[in-house]
Picture 1: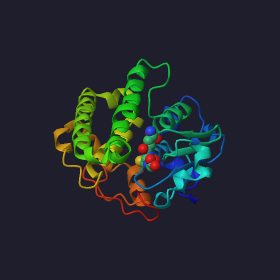
Picture 2: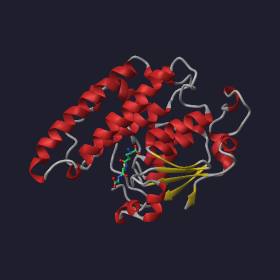
Picture 3: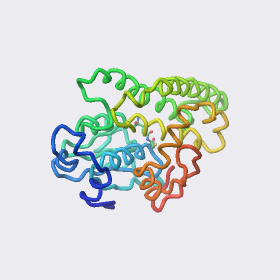
Length: 264
Ligand SMILES: N[C@@H](CCC(=O)N[C@@H](CS)C(=O)NCC(=O)O)C(=O)O
């Protein structure tokens, strides 16, 4: 288990946070002064959670899930996430799995990076969070793990159909971001949606290896601007170092070269 920074370090990285919050409560206090543990693998869906934890200034440590030996199938890991997928966030309330659920828990617990429950923007935010999780991200799994979804003889047809679906989903996200979804999701972007979408753009550009020709970020100008902006976010810079993501992880990604673990 690696501790990637002290509570005070993490909090200090997000200056001005106290002025914008109703209660003078530090990120550490909001989690009962107990360190959260992110079960992660480099460049996996856990990346979204790493970025958001860091951007919120929430203290956390990481625990590598060794994908090379399918540690996600270990009984110990399945006790945290019965589905056996990465990530899991261990919290004082118990383990939370599913990227969207973790993001919502964090945003609500910390009152940050998403509209609060009584905000008029809340419904729109929830719609796009669930669409990201249930539609875009879920369909990306069809592309990345085709062997679980299509018979061997239908792989290229499966890829073609899935890529077309993803392309259509991304055009919807492009339209939403063109209409200022990020700005309405929270008074001070980036929102949790921004980081989630940026990671999806990265994965579409990189995976599956040899099967990314359908994806073209240049055709998604609002999302490309988001990707370029988040490339240099302080939380991204620390994620680049922690997971070996390369210099422009969202706008022009390259395969991860992580200091520990493996992406697949
Ligand atoms: N619906 C899940 C999907 C997470 C997911 O697909 N994780 C991948 C890594 S990016 C994984 O665990 N792959 C290993 C496997 O499926 O065995 C979530 O949102 O957390």
